[in-house]
Image 1 (cartoon, rainbow, N blue to C red):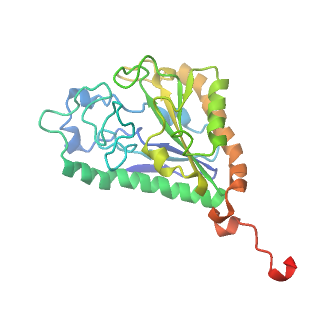
Image 2 (cartoon, helix red, strand yellow):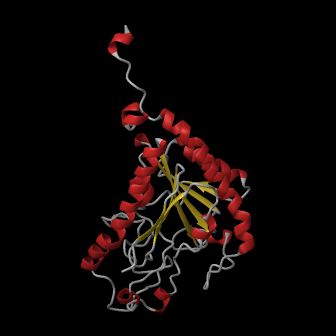
Image 3 (spheres, rainbow, N blue to C red):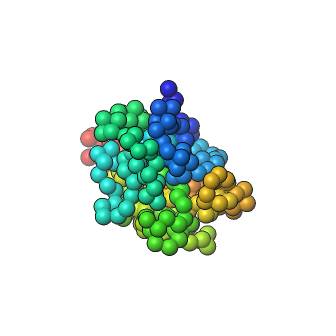
Length: 288
């Protein structure tokens, strides 16, 4: 069986999560997809390549499985992250456009969804939590950038054309305001289109792992695929020139977050810090 996740540990304060880059389909699942499903249209294409070695010391946690097996960025309860808005399920039954992806009568059952949660979804998030804990123990804080991409025009999900940079913090609840401002500032400085907490406000990953009071900051970056693909249709090839133009801005974002980490660690409430990072208690005799 393929490992549900791939971890590349680094020594810096940043963790990159990549829940939708995997393309692995177990044979029994692949055989039940229809022709549309086998295109894997809703993959976050080339995200790993875009972020590869942008700055030293990055920890990267990638899901190896495709989101059509189970979506690692959905609430495991199945509750919608965007009530009232169109989206796809924990195990999608359609593409983002609403086109069915399973052969008729071969859609996943509730029992299969539960099994996939245990086999794929939970191990990915356990690995991500382990890396966040390891990084926080080293630096006093851990900053998660949850890395995504999506087609720039999907009428079922949003009107018009998606901005290049779509930053999500669930309205500021998943990270310190300085983290949000650093990413939003670099997006604005790039001259590209951008939005903060627009259509994509952060999925289950940022909402689950982002606990700023505990030193765990999380922010989602959804890139419009028009910013780096030659075409947003099969074979979804990476445009080398577009990628080369985009990567410096992504690198600046990561550097800004890295530079913020020591300040975030210093200002973290003392009661939430690991014992080894708290100021030593002054003996009572020396206080007098």
